[in-house]
Each structure stands twice: as C-alpha cells, then as structure tokens.
Amino acid sequence: MALRALARVEDFAKVWNPQPKGPGVIDKIKNTINPPPPLRHKLAVALYKLRVQNNKLEYIIAKMKERDQALFEKVVQAHMEKDTQRAAMYAAEVAELRKMIKSLMVAKYAVERVALRLETVMTMGDVLVGLAPVVGVIKDLRRYLTGLVPEIGLEMAEIGEILESVVTEAGEFTGFMSMPSGVYSEEAKKIMEEAAAIAEQRMKAEFPELPSAFPTPGGSQQNK
Image (cartoon, rainbow, N blue to C red; front, side):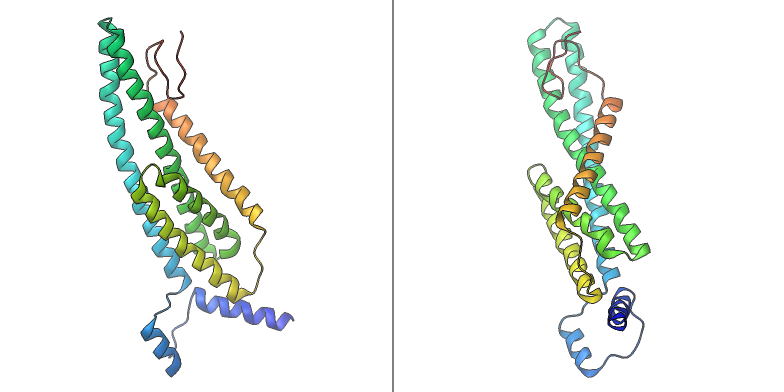
C-alpha cells in the first residue's frame, strides 16, 4: 500500500516538474496530436490571464474615479449655488457610480488574492489543498463580474476551466481525495469577504462624502 502511494506521488512529481527524457513512439504521436502542457505551465497561463484581468479592472476603476470626481465637483457647485434639484441629480449619479466602483474593487482585491495563492501553489506545489479553494473564488468572480463587466466574466470562466483541469489532473496522479466541497466553499467565501472589507476601507479613504441630505453609496441619505 505504501509503495503504491509512493509511486503515485512520484508520478505527480514528474507531471508537476517533468524531467527531460526521450518519449516513446506512442507518446510522440499523442504529443503531436494534442500536446499536454505540464501543470506548472497551466498555472503560469492562468496567473498571466488573472493579471491581465486585474489590469483591466484597475483601468476601469481609474476611469470611473475620474468620472466620480467630475460629478462630485458638480454636486458641490450646485449645492453652493442653492440649486438643490441639480445637486440632488448629480448626487444620485455619484451614489450609483460609487456602488459600481465598490463592486469592481471587491473583484479586483479578490483577483489579487487569488493571484497570490497561485504564486504560492507554484512555489510549494501543494495543488489540491492550495488550489481548490481558488477554483471556488473564480466561479464566484465569474458570476459576480458577468453582470458588471461581461468580457472579464468570460475570461474568468476560461481561467476557472484551466484551474479545474489542474486540480483534476493533480488528483488523478496523486490518488488523493480532495477535501469536502463545503470546506473549499467556506474558504472561497472568506476570501470574498476579505476583499469586500478592503474595498469598504478604500472607499472611505479615497472618496469624499457627499454634502448632507444627498444619497450615499449605500442608498441612504446623510443627515448631518
């Protein structure tokens, strides 16, 4: 039993970090028709794609911040001119825009945490334990972003497929059973909650409050 487990681990090590050696005839034919990239390469591709999506989110958030600043100045100007109707109109736009910015920030910080986890997995090689929760986060992000930025949502679906294939291959080669899905779901939920908390802090630090009696990003009104 111990020898069989050891053989499985050795097989996984070869796939994770394959040693250069001459393939057999059958292997050459298979590799020609459908080249199987090693697991490390798949993770590198997923990590690169994640960073690209993170850059897209940063760009979108930056453009929205510029729009927010312009609208906020209009709110202040209208407020100073006692034009409450126009000020309220701009304030409502600011509130909706900030909701969108906050949602995108949550996604951005979650993507950054997933990228860090992938880097750790690539360094340590602990695929099943380290990567499976990440797959759950990617699934959540795909659903989360599809309604906000459909293009990035589609990219997240592709990244999720890559990572799922890595987890599947790792499980097949090691023969180890993965932890219950509920454990991974809880960890994925924790990552999203942490990202939301960071986004909340950044919103408070980076965005000035609207003048009193106008909507806030939470949808309520300030009464100071």
